[in-house]
Length: 151
Image (cartoon, rainbow, N blue to C red; front, top):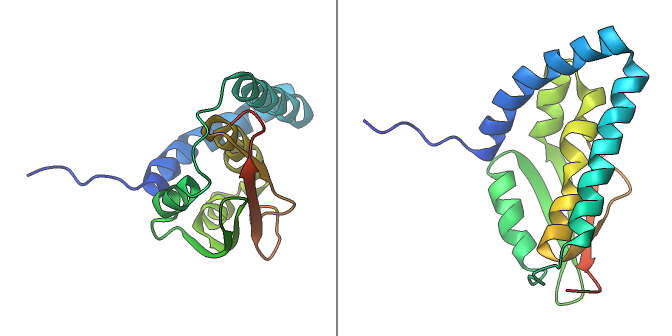
């Protein structure tokens, strides 16, 4: 009997159940500020690397498939705009935020999960602007995608 294929949410939940205690241990040993700053530096490095790569120039509509894959029951969202100039989405329910809250780690969620979105967008040939997240306590996440200049 074949094994059940895990959704992206289930995969990330398994990862976070291992990663959160590890990060909390590092924070206890090295200090919360030092660990948070190290994570932020790694995120910035990943974004810089993604920005330096030539973008494949995927159409903005490619984000629809990404939301379907990452959503897969884990996100409730409304597509606000979907055309050649922009792909805008408001996420009104995020099980990723709920999972991190259940793990007692909602404060780590933006650093460990949400912050990866910008580099992923850059690698697709897009720029992501987001001013708020469910993970950060807002009523919704406001994803706003536009084409990269070099895409």
